[in-house]
Image 1 (cartoon, rainbow, N blue to C red):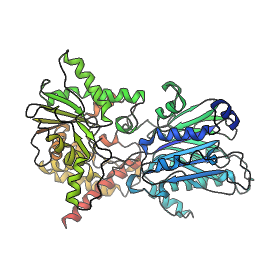
Image 2: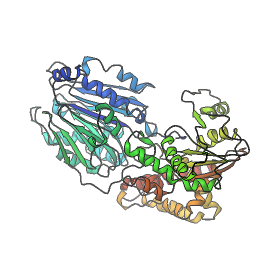
Image 3: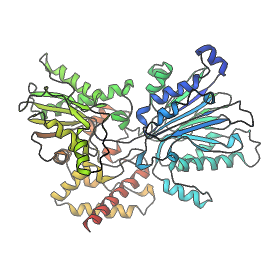
Image 4: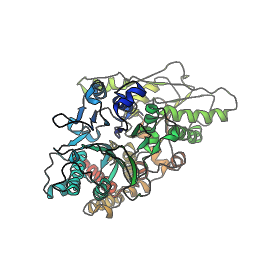
Length: 573
């Protein structure tokens, strides 16, 4: 993806169901669990580069010695930091919890890293928690907690969830349980979780060794699990489990939406339907970009996205196969590009098809120059190009990207560099539809003003003299923000509804065009209908459709509209 897009975290929970002697005899090491945890985190490293953490708990620890260990890092080498400690004997616990953090919305402090802990002298009241989640109603939950006598040091959603779970746990256990009684975790989450508006895959453990994983009732955030006689393990991505434990796709199961996965102190595994499942709204961006493409289903879906783009791409080059070079923006767009390439080859009837990698991303490129103009000039060179493949003045150049969100890198870097090759026409292709709406569920795109599609929509509204419609939407958004979440509507939708899909795409193309570009520029977007054809089981497409999966999503989008208008008004003065 050309845009830098922060997104969901990665989490893994591992429960060893045998004693250390068993693993030493069968696998040749007493560090079986910690090494599997290291591999699971490494194979999900794409999900977190702003922080990492892990915890290990020992069931047989005696009073006077620690029964769990917790380490976190938010350095530039966070995962390497914690993995460098993992061969220490202190990590030889039976329950292991790991987390990789993407610091969305600027929250990149060590306190924001997981696991978070609520400690108690009684092991059954100690909670360690980690997850992939974002809530839309953290402010309301924070207010409710403080009004009931809780004093939270910050309003991070992880700390709010920890406080809510801890509060319910104390009520279930009562004042005099002796520190040994196992709480009813199904009841706990049935009472606590209905208040959470958002997407989550939540993993954790109690100090007495009981552990759990809970997925939101709409399945917004992904979660997978596997168990046998030796282990129970769960993670955010299926291929991580397959690699770590040499499993087939069929052996790894999806945690059902609303389900609670439990492992008792005795190692017994239960899967309970804890929350009433809602209509599934699995995040489709997982399929487009977030998850690694080595998952069998994701590989197939991304290739189909590419195949479904073939007709509009050929239209964009006027059917001129012989004078077109096909390529992609590295790295994750490669799988989608293969799908388009397969379709092109199938249609080309044996004639030569010209394709290859034209853009090369310099992953080691960094600039810390303070002068803004100089820094902008250097940032253009984050990407480089392969010379000699495009015939100057004669060829169309097609480049496929995962999606276009803000468009800054495309406008300021990629298009300028591609233009140096001298193509007569550049066709930028997005495997996803235009990103029209902000997200409130864990992706770092909460501002409407940063979305190039919204910039284009506002420009079209003004050109078509629909200012009154825009002001009506703003007024409705202000009124809605005074209502409960479940009574609000998405007040940005009418703005896009007044525009045609093709005219919106054309306007985005005009806004992506950098000053001085010599080549003709055309932009092709996937249609929402074709995206649903490619990913039929992942209908969480609110970034494109505006159909938010929970009531709190409408609050996020209406608040974003008001922030946008207020910022414009401030600049006017």
